[in-house]
Structures are given as C-alpha cells and as structure tokens.
Length: 445
Image (cartoon, rainbow, N blue to C red; front, side):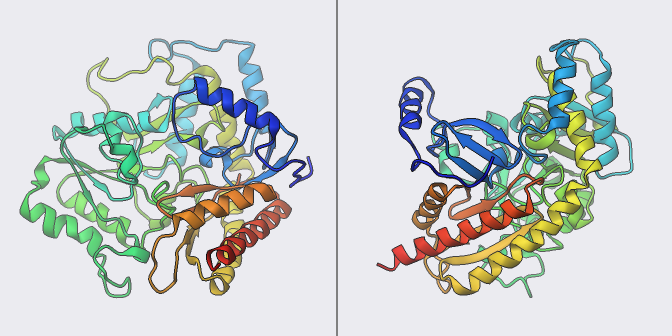
C-alpha cells in the first residue's frame, strides 16, 4: 500500500454509514475518531472508503511489531490447527510455561518469578492488587495523579488521569492515596527540576507517612515508569529510584505498570530499565501479543498466592493469545526492536524539538524511544492547556493521512509501530508538524 493516500475526505460516505449504525448498537465509549478500518499492514491502515493512512497510534501502543506481523500470524494459524481454548487455569499445556519462562527471562530482576495470565491491562493490575494484598496483609496503596491503570473497579481506584474515568463510579476501592507524579513541565509544587530534590517522591515519606497514612498499612506503590494516558510523561531521573528506596524502607512492594510502555516501546524492553530499578510486580498487556487479547502479571515467586482459587481467569492464557505472544516476543528480540525504537525516537524527538522552537503552541516535547508526547499550549509563557487546538491537530492530520491519538489533557502521542519504515516515520512527522502549524495559524485568527 502507498501512503498516505486520501481519495475522499474522512469520514467518507461508506464510513458515515457504518458510524451511524455503530452508534445505534454499540455502547458509548471513547470511539471519537471517525475512522472505519478494513485493512491494516505493518504501519499502514486502510479505511472503508479506500483512504490509506500512516499509523502513529499502533492500536494504542499495541502493534509494536506492526499490524498483522507475519511471524505472529503464522503462529496463530499453526495453533488454530491444534486447539483454541484449553481452560488454561484448570489444565496445563506447553504454551503457558513457555511464555511464562520467556517473560521471567526478559523482565528486570535476577530472582525467581511467577506469571499470572489474564486478558487485558486492567485485569493484570487487578491481579497485582490481589497479589500485593495477600502477600503483605496490608490494604492501602499509593498511586499517582495522572496515572491510568484501567477502568475496572479495583484498577479504577488507582487511575487518576481524567475526571470522566471516575465520575459516577464512587466509591471505588478504599485505601488509595494519590500523590503528584514527576511531571516537571507542570510541577504541582511549582519547583524547578534543577533544585527540587525530587520532592514529589519524598513527599510520600515526609508528608503522607508522617501525617495520616501509616506506612505499615501500605501494600504497594503503583507507578507507570512513563505515564501513558496522563500525557506520555517521562519523570525526572531519580524519581523512580527514590520510590524504590521508600518502598524498601517500609517493606512496601513496588508495582511497575508496563501495560503501555513495555515490550520495546520506550527503547528498552521495559521502561523501568531506563531508571535502573527493579520492581516486585510488573503488569503487562497491550503489545504482549500483537493485538490478540492477553495480559500478564509477573511477580516475585515469594508473592505467589498460597491457596488455589485465590484468583483465576477463564480465558487468561488462551492458546491463540499465547502462541501470538511467544512469536511476538521472539520477533522483538530477534529484530532488536527496542534498539530500533531508541534510534528512531531520537530522530523524531530532534525534529519535534526543532519545530517547538518555531511554533508557539508546542509547549513541550518529551519521550523515550517511540513513546513521545507533544504538549499543546496556548502560550509557551503561560503553559495554558489548549485541548481545542490539540483536537484540531488530530483532525487536520487525519485528513492528510496520519492517524494520531491524544494523551492527557492537552498532548498528542507519537507511537507508531516499532517496525515503522523510516520513510513513513519522516512523512508522518512532516504531516504532524504541518498540522500543528495550521492549527496554530487558525488559533491566531
């Protein structure tokens, strides 16, 4: 497929018909982009009206190995000839231990680990909550403002990126305290990263634990090493390390949510590796199986459930998902996709930071690997969020043949497949910068 190719402005007539029918029958969710997909190939997407787009979203950082990766497709086809569902939490098969063994090998930490398979990111977080509670005998958690850990009731209690996620669902799981993340561009303490002494982390020990949160009741600190839905926010170096120190001081577990940042996206296999920190529990999903629903919670072996039946899942570890995951992980390692993401990410960051110097509404550009956030503001001086312009940029880009997704209040995420061709990466960046420039000009009228 040649891209981009726009034959009719989206949404075209066929797309409009499908969208109309979908709104009648599908429950309301975040389906706001008027795109009706009929085919996906590596870093390209074709819609029902024949338009072809460059994909800078990767299915929300799911298609790290590209859409319909041949190795993954072949693994699924081979498994289809054997069996689809084995009730994996009741019976054994060789796929479960093979994928678990691979996850134990590639995740940080030189100690014995065990793996719980589920179907999604939010379920992997739910499992982590239960592991932490049962292992520590404690029931409180520390999470972060801007965090996204899912929308089921337990994980929702940790999520704090948008009011809409929480509105109408209170009370969620009690015992969760939210504290500021190391969002240096918008420091809630109004400090400078040059002299803040990582106060956002130390605040947990020096304020929360000294006033109203007994640390001996806290089971875990739950953190994204790079915030995803919160705006693709990279914390200051030292922040994650300080959380580890605080956790160790009070025998608290550190839960690392790698659902969006994992499997090479950040330029490392797992984003926490950028900060030389080893967590006790890791939650994963999204890119683990290249688009087939799968989640996995990787825990220190000593944290394993002591009683059979404490937790389970009918479809967790489904055979097709595990076959896809094994092929997916092997492809990531064989093709050195983390290293490729790091290299291409540096190029993308350079171009976007150059554009930031010129364009007033680009307030910040940050990222690791191909997990890049572009924050849109009304003014560099005031840093006032500008979600209207951000939304306009994604709309303009779509009409030019580039798929983008928002992140946080006012950021755009740049998250193409890690297999994106260099040509499509450069063309996509051209379109993105042109779209930002057009939105900037419109905002001045």
